[in-house]
Image (cartoon, rainbow, N blue to C red):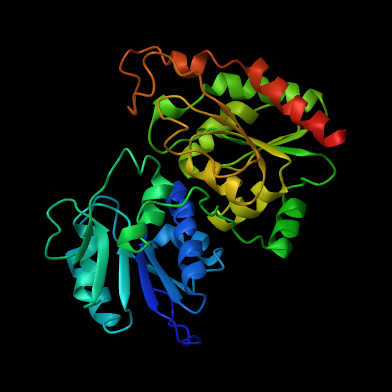
Length: 348
């Protein structure tokens, strides 16, 4: 857990229990912005997995990040109890974004007076301000998050939901561009990974074809992702001068700053896509098994490539039909044309 920061405001003290996915944590910033608009003096802390601290630190609305060293899928009862007792008495309200039972434990152990979240997994004793999830009204993840920060009569989110906007560290960005030799050319980022599964991943062969064509146009290509994405990055970058495989070579906060330095990015529906949206980079967003209606990039600077086949969205990790046509039928030429069209618009 990060060190306690001094109290500087007299508003409500709010604990947000954040989600366990990068994209969802970015979208949770819309809730923080909503809370600050309601009460500019409120103090907001965000609880999340260890990896989430760099994202939370880039949210101006968050005072501090609280982290738990608990593996994904683990209950971590003792760790949650210890953290809850440590922060006992520090908060007036807790908003629990995940719908799991374990996510509601820390606010309960901390004795937070008002503990708000959607009904789910028999959390009746853990949450004392439960909300019913109307999936037709709250048809997007970000709407669900924002609704939990609104008074009950106004729990349906407004038509205009505030969009995430992460801070950029310009000094770190400059150092990264120098370190990796990325100066002097316009940059296109590529994010070939998708933690959820292969049914959300555009073919690596298509990424490579696109990278070859972009390099031929004098554009630098940066492939970003975690250590698990490094082999995919190698498949795209190997032997191509001007294509930099940085998967696993950067921290999450570095990815924020590098994405902000890119003119455009090509991404699956992934966490880094939402990071790119939150730093204002133009996105070529590729959707396969998921739906852009449910988790769209929260920006005006995005073009969505989704075929809406009869079999999609299936929301499966692996294509149940074995063909992944929802991705394979989105050609590299289509994405190349979209990149060039946007570049022409900027030059006009």
